[in-house]
Amino acid sequence: MIEQQIETRNSTKKIYIAIFLTALVLRLAYCFYLQKFMWGGEFRYTTADTSSYLDSFMNLIHYGRYCFDLEIKDSCFYRLPTYPFFLGINHLIFGKFAWASVSLFQSMIDAVSCCLAFAIARGLNFDLVSQRVVALLFIFYPFTIVWTSVQVPEVIGVFFVLLAVYFIVVEQRQVLSVLGSGAALVLAVWSKQYTLALLPAVVFLVASRADWKKAITITAAISLSFCVFYSPWPIRNYVNHGEWAFLMGKTTGHRFYLADFASEMNFVKLFYENPKDQLEIMATNGKLVLPKSDFVKEHRYEIDQAVRLAFEKGPGSLIRQGKILKINTEFRVDEKNVADAFSILSIKAKNEMVFTEYYRTAFESFQKGFFKTNYIAKSGSAIIQAILFGYRGILVVLGISAIFVARDRVRWFILGVLIYWVSTLFVISFIYRQVEMRYLLMSDMLLIICSGLTIGWLLGKVRNLQMNIRRI
Image 1 (cartoon, rainbow, N blue to C red):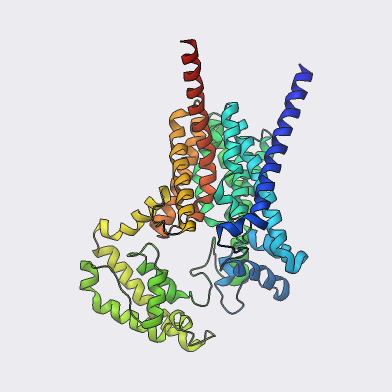
Image 2: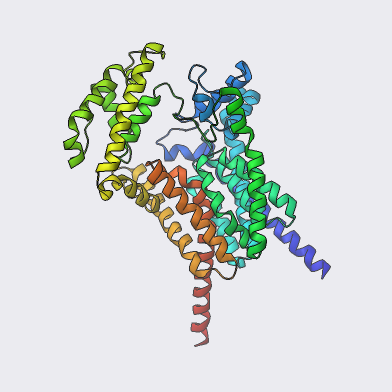
């Protein structure tokens, strides 16, 4: 009996090693070679967001202030600390080779994420086929692989979400489970703030391993642990800057995205799922083209006045035009006036537009979260992306279907994942009103664990059917 247990443990270790090494080799191959075929011969290691993560840490090291722009107050709040510290430490140690070290470490971290997913499937007592399907889905999932080379927090966020769920679902030592999950949830939220939507689902995740009375007690302990570990961020914001900023500031802290531009963005989001192009046009020629509607027709004069004020004196628009390089106090009043003008328009729109018109773009964003269908396959890259997003859409459907396949307490886990996934999609669709698929990546990865269960169940049905046919 003991020998059999030792043999089983050794076999399990070999599986974990195989998962880790396969995932690692595939990701390194992508980072340093294969990605050039994805991006037309280019290698992508940074994005427009990378500098704000890196500068936040570097300004802390060199000037004692955690912000990515020393002259803009809100930049002190915008970048939550997990990824800036990870990225900054890499740059401090490896210097000009940080692009390679980040790719290496993120590949290793994502390979560990694959192992965590397999461990969660085992902890939930998935059948052997489903466990292996989960591992394979994670190893070859394209939307985590493509982010391993890029200096943004998606891969780190996925890791901490899975680590938190591992502590909740698998870890048997109660104290470690509570403290570990609380700390991992904090680091996940500090990686991507949308992870906060996981908190309402925690009680269901705990219910997959304990009765409801105990689950509520454990959830309360995890919530307390989360609050304790999270508290340094808002305390720091209040002590150093006089504001209780729990997530990010009122604006992004970018020079071209001050209060005036933030207000413009919120208004234009009522009409366009992605308003950036319209705002660029407005900053260039002072015109804002909106879809025809009764509200736009009735308030055309007010809209034109607000656009003219933004174009002539709004700091955000002036910086976009290249007319000023520094925010001076003479623009502060106009920044507020522009922000107020567009905020008033947004309030009027909320009160006067019919429900379907006001939430049209939000529903478009919500639909995009299920199936992204706006790719026109005119080039090889577009065709590849259309295929990949179609694959993701199939996995989403399979993940949701797992609620009908799961048995016993596993159903509570599936329900918790669905609550997290839908909550994330709802927040970014109806509150932020702008869906970028990477915002869903953390919740997607938990849903893929559910997809593995459904696929394993389907394969079992096929196997049973084959056996029945042979008997006949």
